[in-house]
Image (cartoon, rainbow, N blue to C red):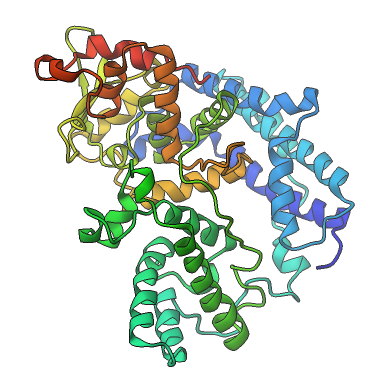
Length: 474
């Protein structure tokens, strides 16, 4: 890789600023576009709250010297194409400059919501880049390096590449071939069998390994009777039932053989394989929790989103529900409890009696507009965009990477999307002395109540409010 220069940084920032300008220019159309999409437009008061939260998040690094939101992003992106050693100061300065521009977009939105149209136009004009159309940093600066770019006209899909690879591995024994095809059934689901191989990135490989690491052992009940997709969708797997580390390393080895040995060295489809530099370190199996600071960072980011991702992740953070339970919610599941006057979620897509339950809606979700989001949906799915459950996992992986939140905590415990549930339960147990209350909210079987279990009634929404109301991430 050649050395990064200030001109490279400026060129890339110019490209990012074009996107920012277009976002700011589209602010007046946001309400109309929301309505055309079947959603209730955000009110001016709600919009001002959102912009204030995001602005405060961006401003924090301006004055305390901490790493800016964009600095970490720039470091990761530019290091893929350049040798950035010695340019850390320039990258940090660029990050602050871009965060200032992000802050300007929020100022423009605030001005527009305050009906200060002249102020909005003035800020918009200050965001206008000198050149509206600029070449991509990859195309202009490293075109001769062909980083992960195809060198052939007909790029195969992952399924096609796998079929050719199996033929290439003609020396595989039938037993070994069956084992490899079993592993590919998961890899294909996670990366997408119809995905052109040149669109598969290093981050996709890393995300795939995270999911694989959380799979159950296929030789144990009830998992051996499940399909690959059902295993991927499993939540709350017992610690002893997780796949062994050696098997996870086997998935990486197979990917390296496919992407590096075959598609890169033999077929010349890549100059640099997406598995290049990817390592798998053996870690302990338990899930870890996020800290309060990390949860504030995550929830702030969730609030800044505008599509299904916003509500899926906020619901996960404020309900402690399982990923699949939220992904399959319907509008009908959002109900009003007459006794307490509070709304709740009726979770019915569960295989256990304990999993079928009422979860009171946190006041923060109502304040942010979740009820307005759910009403136009009528009786259909709240999140029809989620066509496969792992989509939630993949998007969360990218969010965690963007916010530079470590996959492992100090105790070498894994933090994934399921850790939002783990974190909720940990916080709830610290706030509420009655374990049964927490167990009913999160869908665990009641324990530690012995003979009295048969006489314990299903707790009401009013009785469960203390569990969710005690959760404070912001």
